Length: 114
Length: 112
Image (cartoon, rainbow over all chains, first blue to last red):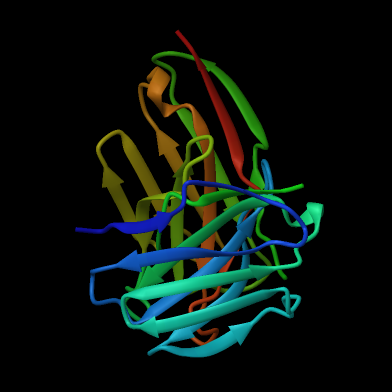
């Protein structure tokens, strides 16, 4: 089973709201990723977790706060977002970082910030 | 971050035709991946390539890892309407904590 699940599918929020995106995988993968994707553009890496520890933060604004409660779950906490943060947010996972460790993506959360 | 040069940017073809797209880079990669993305969905992995010169098929899809390790191509034979979508190539180096370098995508439209 190569499935990564994400909730919610769609989210609309105001600039003063606090919300969270959730991602889950049960493939035993030890690396998990958050990406942001604008329309007709490739995904842009935001964060990488390895063994539940933050390995990469691509200079993402602090209004995005990632959390990895355990090896199967990844959250992205959102606070005081801007309209330009509206995008498709993708979660991915891989067994590790070496070759032969393909990344599998979830279906994404479509975020609209009003 | 670095992006790969993926071409063509878009293709409009008739059902039954073959399709070819490619990615090139100025840097060497250890792994090449090809993804397909439908509107509003996440990218789906189509083919993964691990060795220079490797040729791999998945149904009507065939992909190759270039000998120089700086390029890859994807062919789709006998296209069907459900092949419509955006195809992304992605390269991965062994030393970059899983980071993927993406091409800009090829938008494929198939006319029945």
